[in-house]
Length: 305
Image 1 (cartoon, rainbow, N blue to C red):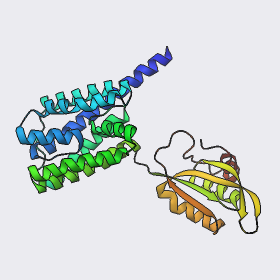
Image 2 (image 1 turned 30 degrees about the vertical axis):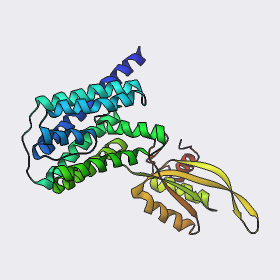
Image 3 (image 1 turned 90 degrees about the horizontal axis):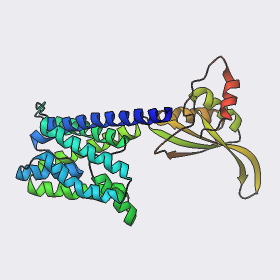
């Protein structure tokens, strides 16, 4: 029974957040982009372009142009995602149709920035909760699955074609402002999906591994995974057993970590790598200063994942 309640609560939370995403995307479209003839990328951009040319209801266009992508998605992603996406796209279309927002500004730069900000926030919240408001992402997944071309390249090519058509059919100025809108939308969408914290992975090989891992725990309070390895000299063939430190930290702490390591071992071998997603484990733990090094030693042996 508790499990069923949790599922119902989770579903209600997801749909409440999707509703918020729809409202934010609607503000971006109706209060900024539509009244000023600006475009975004993807299916939304196609709908806006056609609306600009032939003045067909934007809500109808959004639904019509989303149908082919949803059909593609039916054979590519889960049926649950498609069902939620259908509900979300219909919700967005209805909200845009019945809601009228006042025009907030006529400054073209502000329109691009804030239109992209609201639209990107709405799309990002929808994606985080398992659906899409724009079908171009589904096209990217489909082509990646069939031909191995990256999703990012597919979406980029899709939008290059769209903005090129815009430049010739409407105006180069509108096309350039629309590109700016798309860039803002894409960046905000990524930030909402991935979160505002930017993590980076670090692997450290040093003869003073014991001191380094204790200081990292003490100063940064981050979890870590310890690998057993051998440190060797290729020419002489000499080796020694060492602990290889693997940890995930916020990018803003990277210089502090370098200082910690350099103060202990200037010759330590350090490898950085980008981290796209982090789930589970101990990313950060604030230590009780009174427990000092003993607590740090205990945590240093605790696996991060």
